[in-house]
Image (cartoon, rainbow, N blue to C red):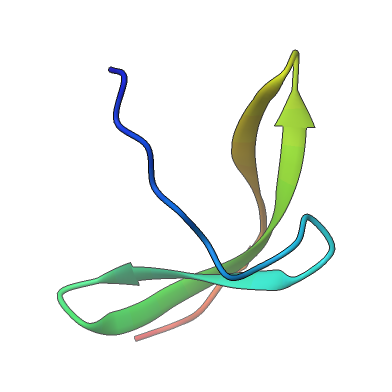
Length: 46
């Protein structure tokens, strides 16, 4: 809590969900009640 993560992106830019350096899904940044969140658009098979 309270951690600020600066992004060089806008809410309309796509984002990649990564685990251990591998992309596992795709999403987009959204505003949820004034907080930034990631809406998952799909999962990638490994």
